[in-house]
Image (cartoon, rainbow, N blue to C red):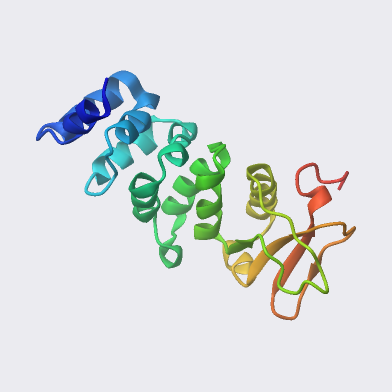
Length: 188
């Protein structure tokens, strides 16, 4: 189907009803169809909530492929950082543990906790490597299992240190973790 036809379908007055039908019939194809039709989630709170209830978290992974307003409007729909209650935490936890998309995992983690920095705070002390989805999942799994949300939020940022063999916490509340252990745990 030509792009113009997809965009025209997305502009139909019945599109919100059509998206509900697409969700019921095609489930995980809803996000790719929205992306192909140049749609986003603005004004579609009911659709997002229904997708979060009936779908699997990986249904949202294609959002990264389409990016732009589709991704932004989805992230904007999620509970703001300062208003996360138990219900919102459960919703974000389900998404966080199920996504395989870096474009989604990173903002979810940062919505819950704090910044994941790819650049060093001091090049004379530590070189860093970029965060990957598997690193974020390992850190999230550890933090969500062992520390209260408020404690983790006292951290300014997390870093993955290159060629280091131990973690540290700076006076400015930065936490540097060994990149070599960020995925496997290094036996710890």
